[in-house]
Image (cartoon, rainbow, N blue to C red; front, side, top):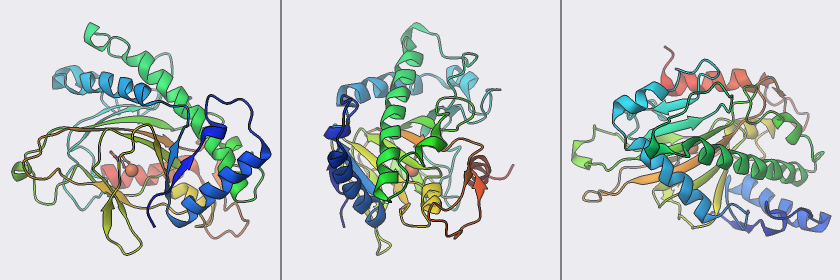
Length: 311
Ligand SMILES: O=C(O)CCC(=O)C(=O)O
Ligand SMILES: [Fe+2]
């Protein structure tokens, strides 16, 4: 089944009122997508293509700076939050059996006032643009969490109340800007890719892509390309949500390969990884105890150890 496109207009960020009937229609559509495919394109969310371009443009300026200007903002160098900051090329391997991914990333995980931001004229607005986009993604995510609960016939607050602290250091939700530089495919290491096969870790991810390149694993085990539909948000279920819903919602592996030989294009994407609050104990929402309870924080630590190595 290909990835469905669902019109989210009735519950878009521009709408203040939504009827029960509209919510019920949306929840039916999202249920089909999340149980059968694990991915859905949402259109008319209220987040515009212009907003996304604006964030990608300022992020590209950050990534194109010389290494020594990015180094002070490295991930693990922020006392407030170990996941906040810049990740250099080939540092992360989302499929640990491959060489390091050919991508750079900037994680906005902490909005704490003590966080240090780039201050050069060239990057004017970097903090404000990213912070306001983070808040827009947060608002949309809270709406999606409500619809998810309704779609499973649960109390509409059940997922929402476990995401009360997005944007604080009690929650690991991250806006990750990704930059895939031009690749000379013949210079890449054997088996190296832009982003190795993986499934996401937390509740779900909002993904905004500048162009095609993402591939999703089908039931057959084969990967196939995903279109980039301007103005839409691609949402995928992540592993902790699959566990929380006792495998009703499916978290599906995906990857970004190298561009074809001779293609010297770059790629950019923005991923908003939604995580439950660190201290929330995740227990199967159907009461089945199919998986033992685990806190969101412990679960995430386990997963980071896999993608960055134990040390
Ligand atoms: O860049 C993309 O389109 C996908 C990135 C991704 O899957 C991730 O960072 O988890
Ligand atoms: Fe991913």
